[in-house]
Length: 185
Image (cartoon, one colour):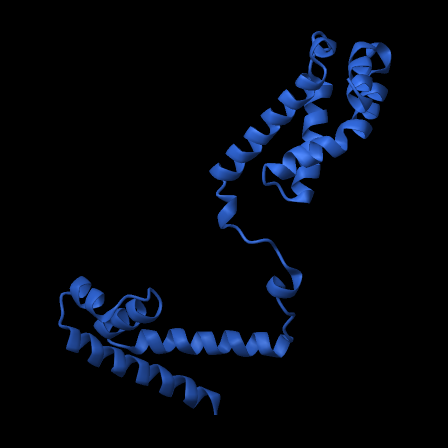
């Protein structure tokens, strides 16, 4: 054995009372090899760091018997277990579908109080305008604009023709636009 591998076997044999110090020493020497191990398996550098921490956390929780007999194999068996667990966790959480938080992209700008009040008033006018529409027209507008259904889907759902859907949608949107314009003046 060479370098850190020989020292690791010694550390695993001599853990006794100084097990945390021996584990810290082992962490210092084996960290680069474990980082490469995890990065070759597709983890990002920050995730690889976390995985290395998980390996040493697991080693610190395992009973001491048997560690010295297997040395490097014991360490990389723990690493393989961590890699498998991380893969399963990311698959079950569908992490590949998530986007990372970017302050510049996702931050919500603070709005002035008067703009918030205006927005609430406009929303109230929109709701009142919707309530003024005939029931069938209101349903058509809400299905088209809120639920994003096609004219054919709306027609099928409400049992009316596509041309009726189009007429009611034009009528409803015109009413809402007029209502919002009149209130804005």
